[in-house]
Image (tube, rainbow, N blue to C red):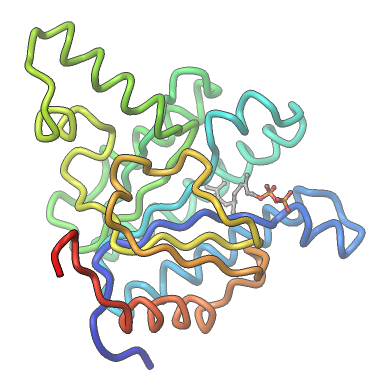
Length: 229
Ligand code: FPP
């Protein structure tokens, strides 16, 4: 069990699906499928712990530009499958779904599914699962600044925050990256200013609820000073 301070919002960089599949001599899509299962289990665990926000990095702007077409198609198929089944269940269980990122370049049906997932969310859900899809932190900040400029609004931390995709979400308290790399890769750059970071070599399909508990436990022992003493 996890005792002590719990994070309210956890962001997860789900890395390592490809290597997990490769070690099993399987195609990368096999790894993404397993990653999807892992993600579903983590969301369940987060709800048990009464963590209120989970944000997953499902596809970066760089992934969309640089991954082969076939792999992107597999990821879109996974989304089609997931949004068909699990998202409705999340809604029934009082969870909201949110999507952050530029949905314009996605296949029209996927874009529609994602938008419907957001639109059909219960208004007062006590848990929010946010998918970062074709998301990039720099792109998000540049867009927000451009919106403010176009509207003639002064740029301050407060006005800019409100124009980010994440408007209305609290900043993440904890960011987890699986798969052994020790970097943020353009994920929630603005919002992670005071987040605690947790890196693990565990590949995402092996990131079980027990591994998630470890990260949350480590968070609960850290002292956050937010620039104070
Ligand atoms: C990174 O692993 C993972 C991704 C680019 C996709 C993450 C997607 C899922 C976990 C599937 C479930 C979620 C949705 C919403 C479709 P990688 O492929 O970069 O792995 P590697 O670093 O081992 O090559």
